[in-house]
Image (tube, rainbow, N blue to C red; front, side, top):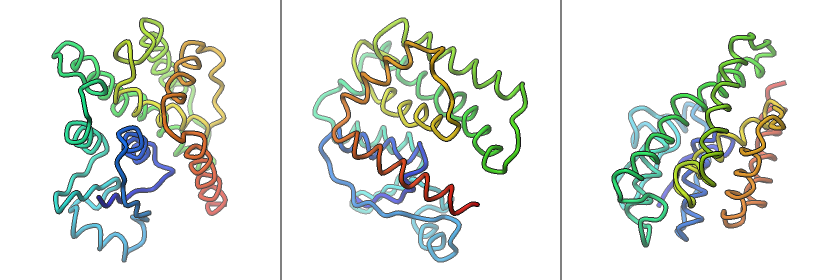
Length: 210
């Protein structure tokens, strides 16, 4: 399976982490969508020329959570990571939509400003806090984001919350998020090595923007 990605992108990280958890191998293809040659090549597969993009035996999937759900429904040995029970699955789906539509949006809005050396407004920081307050509530109610065990919601949220490292954002006021992070990281194969790669790529990207 070819996987077009950028490691500094939290949505791109989700499928890599999931693949490791499922024990499947992705042929990783680092892609710079700002490079005209690479973008043109990607457009032949994905007319939106966005990353991540997955190609599995000629079948092309893009949008990060579409890829995650495709992988888990195709290659998981059981339904633990994406439960088939409609009520449990609805909570997993809600957390995924909360992640991409609320939490990730709040974080990336602030990151974009910081990268431009602009100061986020009080309103933007309050919205970010509000999203984190919600996640804190979710992982206070249960050990994981959507169930009493690890699901794809946790794997996707992990990359999003870890992106707060860009901002050196203090998670001290969120003890349950911090405990949840430790639980999820402990269940991810080779996470320490993966995390170091993300950090190294992030530092290199930030340095290139100066």
